[in-house]
Image: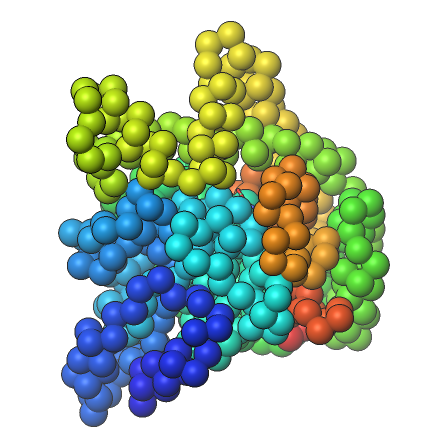
Amino acid sequence: DLVDQSFKRINEVDGKVKAFLTLDEENARNKAKELDGQVGENALFGIPAGIKDNIVTKGLRTTCASKMLENFDPIYNATVMDKLDNANTVTVGKLNMDEFAMGSTTENSAFQITRNPWNLDAVPGGSSGGSAAAVAAGILPFALGTDTGGSIRQPAAFCGVVGLKPTYGRVSRYGVVAFASSLDQVGPITRTVEDNALVLQTIAGLDPNDSTTVNQEVPNFVDGLTGDIKGLKIAVPKEYLGEGVSEASRQSVLDALKVLEGLGATWEEVSLPHSKYAVASYYLLSSSEASANLARFDGVRYGYSTPNPKNLMDLYLKSRSEGFGEEVKLRIILGTYALSSGFYDAYYKKAQQVRTLIRQDFEDIFAKYDVIIGPTTPTSAYKIGEVVHDPVTMYARDLLTIPVNLAGLPGISVPCGFTEGLPLGLQIIGKHFDEQMVYRVAHAYE
Ligand code: GLN
């Protein structure tokens, strides 16, 4: 029935929202039929799921919203997909995103623009915009996204749903198309904190196929949702309520802090002095890593290949020029430049040093506090067309999400009121591998 409902809802609303790039209706209905009448042992048994289109799904087209992979049918599953299959969830389809996860609006998709279900003239955020929109539109109870520099938390905030970026190393990236490997994480987008915890529980853990996964026990996140946050110490960085942050975002966080105080927590203002360098450092590092990761798309091994090339160099040049979109090319050029000999010390090395300082800022705070709280984004969702042609403005608005990726920490966005009919998100950041605490606070607030 749930799978039926998802397809019914897709027929009702996805013509307008345009969250899906590919539907897997026949397989999904068959699997649902197979599961019908069986008794599931876990809470996700038979639950419909949507998957961001940079996570490879065996036999189901995986495009990264790029012309480069328009006809790419993977021959294997990402580890997170195997884990969902073991839990007997039912994949309904693949969700739109910014091409290769580069962007903050989902307008960089080569195929279609996804719209915000709260206001069809607004973007759903990005890069996991299809995932957040599908959950917000009531199509799915959960979707998977990826977060390299905010791409789960920011669209969750813009669409009024719950999105968690796990600690770096908590979830396997095997079978996730690499953007910036030192930052990428897969995480759940859901309507409630409890659902989010259930999905993370299912996809997390050590994976022999991804050496960056960590051998850390995966606690029962749902059991940790006690509602009790008495005596908890919250840090609020002044940079997260300062310059560049709208009054609406600031006020929504102050209101949320009152709720948390009412539940027995206390908060103090702190400082993340190096956070002002986070955006510059992130775009330099992520573009450098992307330039290396995307070298594999050469017209020979995967995806798009230009017809009738004159020679091998022509094949590389034309396949990449024709297969990649503007934003992806911009990042490859920036990253290649930053990594070229003679510039390495001035750019890449500097950015790495800044990254270390940002990580230390967080460590200093977490020596005294349990969680850090602020807005997820400086504003609510942009209008379609508002920022996409001005990448520097678009990048600058990632200032509140990116520090978390640079430090490898877990962070969640939970709905936190509205401004002018559009949702705002509250961001809760925890210590490494302390998703349990992040969820507990988010659940107590929600
Ligand atoms: N806005 C960020 C970027 O464009 C988001 C990336 C991400 O998290 N995938 O790089």
